[in-house]
Image (tube, rainbow, N blue to C red; front, side, top):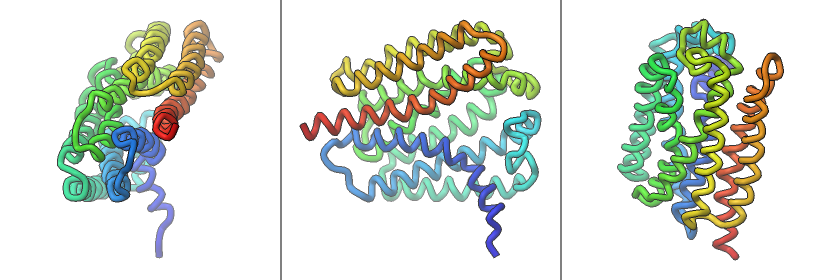
Length: 295
């Protein structure tokens, strides 16, 4: 008999919401790489391979963080931390996902995509989770490179090369990552302090973190204008990006000025909006390209 609770636990290990957002940026990378036509098998197998590799990295992250997760309210009930899935089961699951992902990407897509995807997996699951997260308050800044790679993976899956425009997509997510996670870190500062994770608000205080968040949001505004500046996108994208950046910047500014209960509320509001921001920004890139092509 199928145990739906166990299946759900394994699904939770894969961090499906995070993987889905990554896939959206990877899909945009695919379609920006080839505005004319993409073979159906590239989209299907590329999506499957990248998502399985990302899921494997997520399982490893759960595994490495199981002792930390127990100390944090947000994560204490995760499947491995709570003991519902043991270490051996988690390792086996992560290895199976990784092997299938490698076979799909290397055999059915191309070797460049396979290598880039597994370099990303190693960067997130090992370098970030095992070392950077515990070693420096700049963990999110440095480790953010791994999380920024999906559009490059999508681009490489279609074109089998690395293009400057694909690197610009990586730069956008790389710049977006610190204000996104610092907003959550401000909201969950006590959890991170209890778990002894050196997030920026724990080591340098909330006020300094809010300043850094605001400055990065300003930098993000500039970076997201680059696709228009280098003729990668048109006016439609620029208008959409400007509106999104104004909203993001206004939230960051309000958060910087806030304190007490309002500060926590604005922190989680900023975090939640940052997810919508990234999704809509990449959709704007895609819509703009389609409009330019068909018009």
